[in-house]
Image (tube, rainbow, N blue to C red; front, side, top):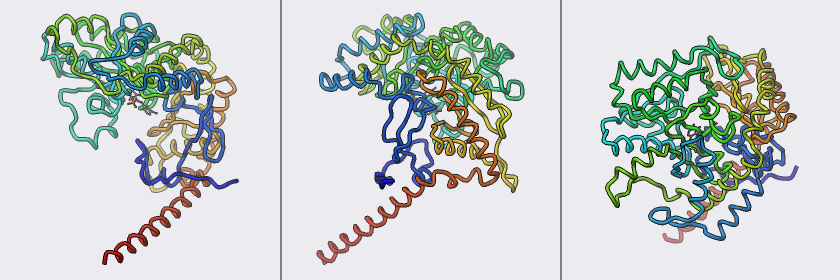
Length: 493
Ligand code: PXG
């Protein structure tokens, strides 16, 4: 094999990644097309996760590339405040048409995190503009993920994403997450029981601990993605809607993952037939290729700002330099056109039974504690690995399975003891087979190794060799720098 030329790995701080471990075995993709990445050593890796859940239409779609390229050379940037450009309005119109009925006023952002914070701010400002400034508490959910900005981590419910960053927002509470493995392990699709009772806990909590008239909004993901594919029981989201309506609380759906066909419908709101007041999205909006998020609000909310703000005032003092930048608008219009032509949400719905059967075929493999699925997403939860000394190694088994899959040519996503699968919606049946067959092989391989199975450096030997090589080159460069530096010192002496 010819020599692999890796970039200098020292400067880039890789997000949400164990950098020291990663840089000892760097997994770099140099190209992507359709459903496959190309690695540095020319291996093809099947994309079992649609990037980070963000490329529903598959990689390198020429329609999107051409639209973005053309836009860059036509209008690369227009100031986003106090002026705009036609594509921003066109993109908003197209997205409004794709949204569930009534959610047709659109605010653009640069990401899911910005969309989550924007949605929370709109909720607070809405109550204020309507004369209810004391309605200012926000409710999120355990194991919820709403991005990484301060608003999002405040209403979010993943301890690991919160604890390093101080106190975040005050006036926030959380409801319970809906997963109950003791009752619902290996449920196919939506669990049948317990939904209404669980949602009623929300009402009990706000009545017992808060005055409901102080609650501005409840934010939930229709299906919790990041924290491990938590599918809500039947009736749960509808009941949350009823409670919100009863007390004048805005219901916000964070559809960054569930949007754009993932569940086999356009949005989770469509799947569960529940209409939120505010719906936020990102990722699939541009098929992942240009950062963009959006917050859709009910027309009444937008109208309240327009009617009740003083004449000439900025109704919402909020926005980003990159709100609706031309290339993001071009990418989103091209993506929505692909969705309209290829009906990708219907394709996901048609494939979902096949996908479900393939996912649940892993039941009975060693360490597999639960399998959850809906649409074209599945989560596998493993037992916690316990080593010889009796210590539990959270996430170690799933990481080893992920690394083994990567060796075998499949990209999956692991968080904690969970592996999530969320392929592009354009996936073929034989590729679905390949995903779950490879996963089965990887699980068996790791489990058969016993204690050694969870040691990361048992995997990806070639990547480890590259990292060693680059470390040596880097040390040599530093040494060279030292000499030059010393020479300069003697020059100055
Ligand atoms: N809300 C939800 C529901 C999300 O899943 C965000 C907000 C934030 O989006 P940005 O664009 O700021 O990253 C997300 C992002 C994973 C994974 O594999 C999930 C996300 C991002 C990266 C990885 O679980 N979700």
